[in-house]
Length: 194
Image 1 (cartoon, rainbow, N blue to C red):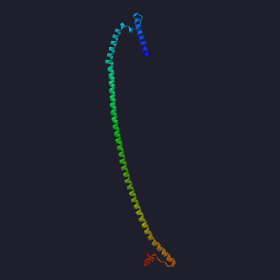
Image 2 (image 1 turned 90 degrees about the horizontal axis):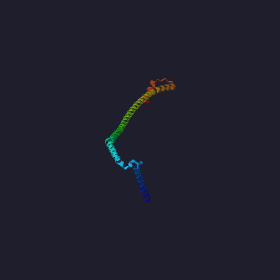
Image 3 (image 1 turned 60 degrees about the vertical axis):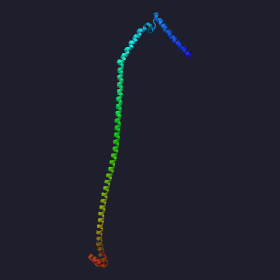
Image 4 (image 1 turned 90 degrees about the vertical axis):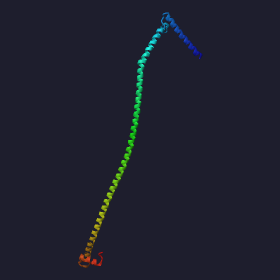
């Protein structure tokens, strides 16, 4: 550390020597640094003070108010933007809530419509099934009636056919020409007609 201190002292002595030489050169009329010429310090300080006051007045009356206005305007704009963002956020949340409510209402409505449609289709299918069953029952009854009528007609025809067959058999076997009426009377008398 003493070496650093020594170097610092040497540098200070060097600067001091340079300043002294500059004063001596100026006094001798040889030039030098005019800023360091002691008799010129008062006018330089006067103009420094005038410049400082002028710059201070310009800054305080013109530049700083404008900067303040810009800062205030920017602050107001930020506040307006934040308020608008909050308002939009609230509107978005409200719209989202109404969308979710509408969606749940639509789902409930769709469920109700589906249930009603299912019930109406089931009722319609049941009605159609009942109509088909009734129609089949009528056709079955009609078919049974037709079968009974055909059966009765066939049984009536059997008597006629049997009578013709008996006439034919009796005529062939006995060479007697008997009529149907005679055969029917003989069968009625014998009780075979029943």
